[in-house]
Length: 127
Image 1 (cartoon, helix red, strand yellow):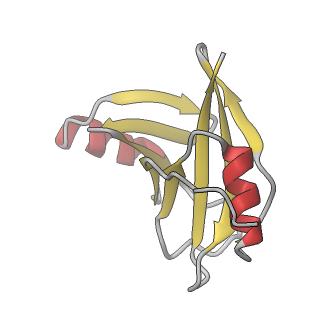
Image 2 (tube, helix red, strand yellow):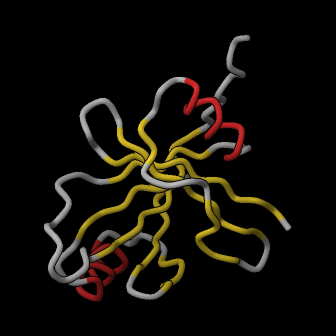
């Protein structure tokens, strides 16, 4: 039986590794004039058109990540996870809720692409 269509609709979020989150927020918000959305722990989120930017500092003692992480938005994260598992994708974790927002729950799952880069699927489940 063929796997169902994946239906990736857009890039929903891009993570940018920074040395200082506060300094980076000031740059992206004040210099580039991107709308600031919110902070969640040590993470900061801004909007760039239809794409959300995540500014994060790698945890102490960990090697800085070399790439940005593309977050592909899907309508059904469980279905997309199952489809990609059938296609042999190397998942780092299972779909899980990252945060409860006022109008939706944010779900993500992370995997490696063919070159070993970390990539993610994200899904905003409306309440």
